Length: 56
Image 1 (tube, one colour):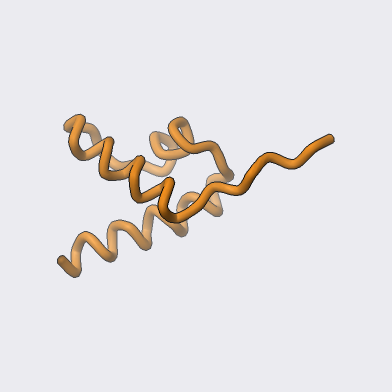
Image 2 (cartoon, helix red, strand yellow):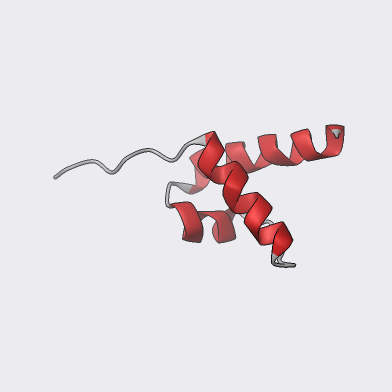
């Protein structure tokens, strides 16, 4: 069984930005629906994105 390509921080960042532009809440499940990946992996990346947004 072939392993899927891992989700990247850039892909998660883009998904989070798209959700915000659409007026939707940024949730781990919403990002996973757009990018794929596991809850634990994407969760860390979404947290990083939120931290970066708060710093700006």
